[in-house]
Length: 110
Length: 116
Image (cartoon, rainbow over all chains, first blue to last red; front, side):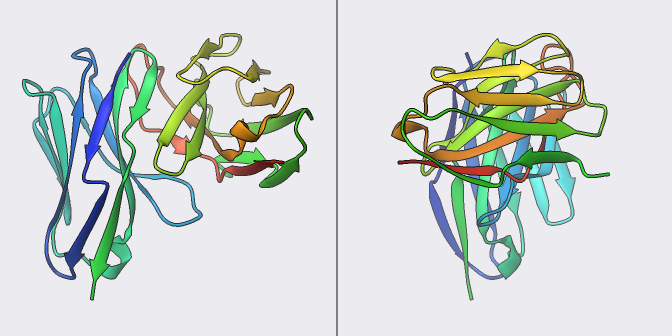
């Protein structure tokens, strides 16, 4: 089955700076890569996703890039704000549904 | 439009007790999933159902059973609860099936289960 590795586990950045979270996957058949944001005590919510026929996708301050050859994808958040503080999960879509990374706790320092 | 509804939100069980976690979606989604979330472990798939009448094991199925009652409802049963099953359980649904064209999941609000 699919195996998704996510780094770093904790990321602390100054407000206004950029944050980058990286994931790798193992199953070359995976064709769907979503990112979820989870605030403390709440459900994960989809923030952006990318399919394997696309290399990059942007939505305001958030962007995701995908390198199929290297089997890695990244989440980029620019101009970080206090409300960006949360745990972020990447996931890879294989034959058995989505496999999630272990999460990155993003801390925005004032 | 409630999305994905889970009940109960909180539950405390004694070791050996049984219970069923309920999940229902009103988005006419085909696929439904049960995940558990433990600190530092991310979300791990317990069981999934691509369509009404079908279920498949995920990464951590031991100690659990599921029923896809109809297109809307997907329940998770713990027959004999153990402390290792203390976790937060999330139900999710998606429009497409993972085999064909997966789509993003919509998650329920979760059930926080403690087994003592």
